[in-house]
Length: 71
Image (cartoon, one colour):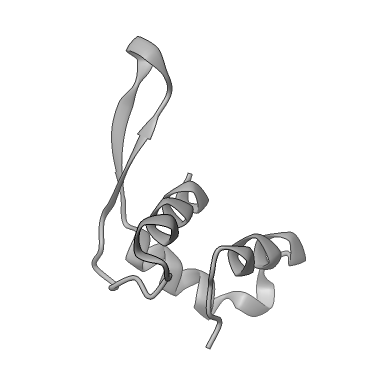
């Protein structure tokens, strides 16, 4: 779900330089089962950067594909 929030942010803003305190709202579900969730995207992005060495290659590739800068 955090990846989806990151992708949504990237598509809207064109980058993933997310302020640490940023909250991203995403819609999950469909039809009557839809709900809006608020995710602490800025904190999550920062955590991914700081843990880059321990992330799976697949996660690094996914995040890199949507504009993640690792340094």
